[in-house]
Image 1 (cartoon, helix red, strand yellow):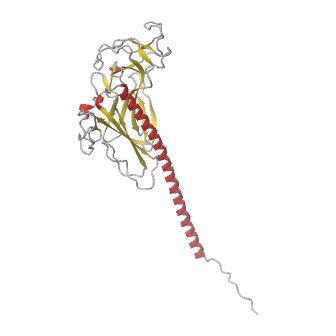
Image 2: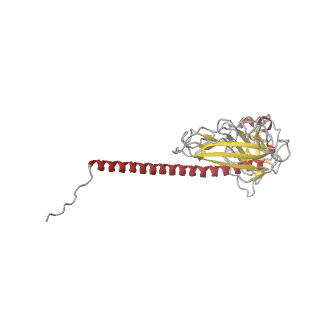
Image 3: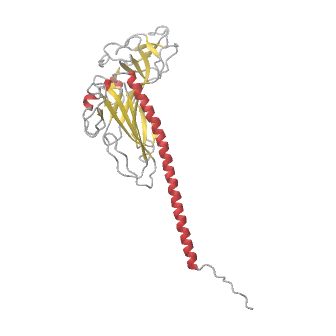
Length: 352
């Protein structure tokens, strides 16, 4: 009897090559999918981080704006010596600057400058002060020296009007030393007899509050902290001319800041319905590229009722998807399409 033959045939060379090709194609597809998923995950993480930073910065900006208006109801501040103004663009006449000031180009991010009292009042004035006063006399609740540094902005406020001056010494003069009386501290300030004193009808009265002030400018930079691929919202100090200003990142990954001001122009106590599609059709300025009301109302900040802030947070890396470009906001047109993932944050700060 013949033994039964068994097949010993294996894969042919052609079958083996086809199998390897299919395996390579499947592996490449899986790798590309995994790589794309990983890149998208990185982009989302970056966007989440930028969003978190933007939200925190937006909240800080809103707080500073509220405090600025609360410290000076008419929205304007008298500068003791106009020669000490730093980089702020003074829009109001007679040595007066707005506590909230906006520069709004239609083809770039906005800049907002805020002058506000930093913290609670730490003393009261024990004597009146005017332009020619060299030392401001202050009494503190605990009779301890005020926490001030040389070149700090100081604010004398009645909460109806405010005057800001620059502190010239390194430390206050202690009580009992001329010209200070017992339990007083004296703050050395710049003096002038020529700068106008129009906002303050007389010397700032004894009993007025003494506060330290901060003057900050928020803008977007594409060069200082990582370049165009990593834009940042930066905060700069507005310093006297003789003092170097400082700039620090407030939030990385912010590519646009847009600001609109709601001003009660007709004096009826409220803002009219917004019509951003037509220039000068409402009581908001900077919400249309052709608004012309700013010139007449930039310094009418006693009628400022709201500040609207818009921030665009952007991932630092492009995504594979065809995403729309930077969105149109306020008076700035939209950008061209690109692959960046973006999130827009907006808030309206209501003011009294």
